[in-house]
Length: 223
Image 1 (spheres, rainbow, N blue to C red):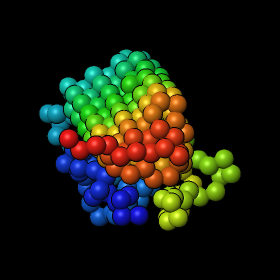
Image 2 (cartoon, helix red, strand yellow):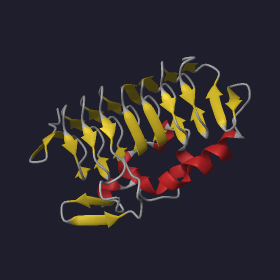
Image 3 (cartoon, rainbow, N blue to C red):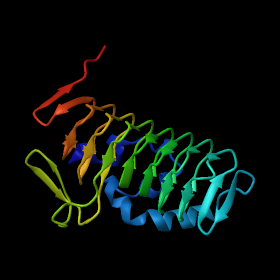
Image 4 (cartoon, rainbow, N blue to C red):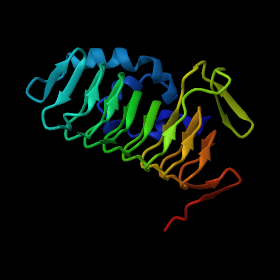
C-alpha cells in the first residue's frame, strides 16, 4: 500500500490542515480526527483574516459565501474560497484556499486542499481531495458499503483493513473525476490521474493513470 501513503498523494504545503496529516501514514487515518482538529485550529486563526460566524465556524474575510449556503460547524472556509448557492456543508469540513463548493454540493467530514473544485451537484463525504482535484458535475463519493461492513482498501491482491465504517475517497493532487462518476467506499486515486465520465471506481488507481473502466486503465505518456 505504499502508493496510498500521504507522502505519495498530497503536497501538504497546499492545505491549512497540514498538521492533521503530518504524524499519519495514510490519509484515511485523518477522517476521525477532522472535527477536533478544526475546533483547535480555528481558535488560533488570526482575527484580521478570519471571522467566526457561528459556533466552530471560521470563514476567511475574503471568501465568497452565498447567502443561501448553509455551513454547520466545525468548519473552516479558507481564503478566497467560494461557497455557492445552496451548498450544504454539514460539518467537519475544511475548504481550502481558492476552492469552489458549488450549487447543491454537499460536504461532510472532508478536507479539500487548496484550489479543489466540487462545483456542481457533488456529494463528498468522509474524503480527502488533494490540491487542484476536480470532480465533474454529478460525481459523488459513496462512503458506506451496502452491507455496512468496515471498509477495506484493495489494490489488486493487497488489502488494508481501515477499521472505518464510513470512508469515501482519497483523491491525490490534480485528480480529474469525470461527470456522473461514483467513487465507491475505499477508493484511492493517485496524483494526476483522470477518471472517465460515468465511471464506477473501486479500489486503488495508480498515479498518472487514465481510468476508462475497471478492465482498461492506461498510463499517461511523459512528454
